[in-house]
Image (cartoon, rainbow, N blue to C red; front, side, top):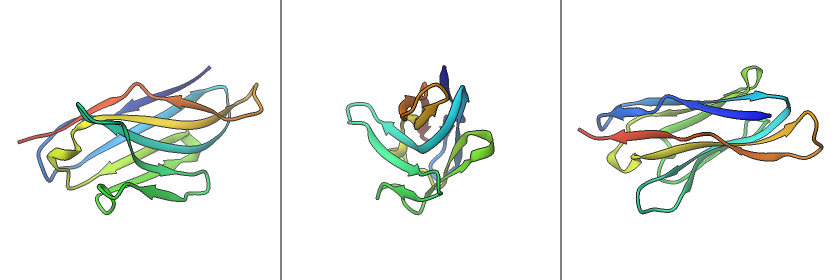
Length: 121
């Protein structure tokens, strides 16, 4: 069994910062791509940022320059540092990872439980 557990959401004022964490646990052989998605009420889920196993990153235009994705491979954990938050960043943020379990030969896509981020004064 493989699990993704997120932490770090909450309420923050505009201009503030939050850091989300996504920890993978279980019978893991390797972790490839890890990413963060978000979904605001009434909107489609969108990719916010992603990072590959070799450290390559990509960001949505709406967060580039404000958000930073990173990972600690030794801890099987990815982070999303969110700075200069604006009300439009309010959404449920979900972690996604492509993981090869120890008893499998392919990667599978796993999702975290989601973390609410609310930006409001």
